[in-house]
Length: 436
Image 1 (cartoon, helix red, strand yellow):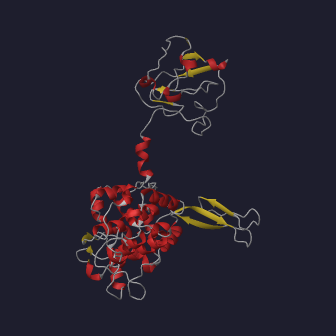
Image 2: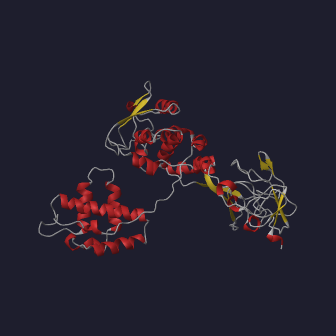
Image 3: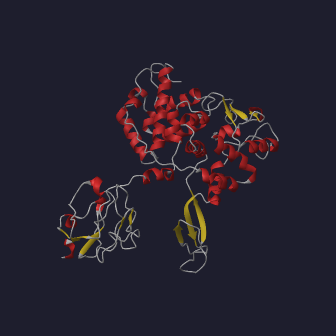
């Protein structure tokens, strides 16, 4: 142990934090590996009283060229904790220089999750002996360690409830508190099957009846099942002829032929990037989509702060917002040649015209529903006019022209008056300037 007169080096502080501060903690092994790997060289040999903010900033900047920002942020937090441990235990008195280093921003990326309509196909794609584990994971949002540490005595099938009080072989969870949860109706028969099939006191033991190891490949099992269930980003169509190497990426698995050898290409699924932990997000996102409050979702995931549930776990399918966004209407017409105006409506051809024949303006505020018009104002197309009327306004070269015939239309630019309207009445002909 470093003497009281001589402050410890950063390496010594990290070693003491791992050996003493994290003794018996589940994170001890991973933290030791992290610090031994990255805290090395000159910075490791620097005494804490000589450790400068500038030196630390250079260290973290260099790590950003090797690691993802999230990993560097985690390393920064671990070093901060190691130095704080020295401060709180009196082995060194001073200010923690980490507090003054530049924060490491982590981009917030969209994470995938299993949509409610994809869950049944996913469960069918899981190997039969592991289906119950995945059913409980996605319907109750339990963490992997909580699932694999769950014991039969924690489950009350007549009451249809269970107590989450363990994680792996530890008698406490990540949150350090016990929680009683109701078992969903869909999960109850699967939990009963798992209990009846288990030969030990665990609900989800390994094939030998013992607890599965922390290296249990749940993520690999999930990725294989996602591919089989069609929960994918697309397919790589691969030529299997030796030495060819031809690959085509597509959104479907339809049969394709190799352009070189005319052999059938093998469609290889590209599963969505979904982790086992993302099944927690799938659980609460499905609940919220069904109308359950975010506060109830936080209780089910056992979060003390609903903000964590809302910002990290509850995810929204963009398709659920389609009706809301489609309610936004400005009367904007489709672009020329877009396929929405195949009948020759405004913007369809862009050809010059000699006349622009139109129906009366729709004063009732009803929307234009196509070239045939709406309500009491059937619309007819003139023989050659294809003028665009963006945002419900007639083109300037028409609006400003003198109207020929009886009952002339007074030019107007009132948006409410013109909304959704494309042209004037058939008995009112306006000379079009684009005719030349």
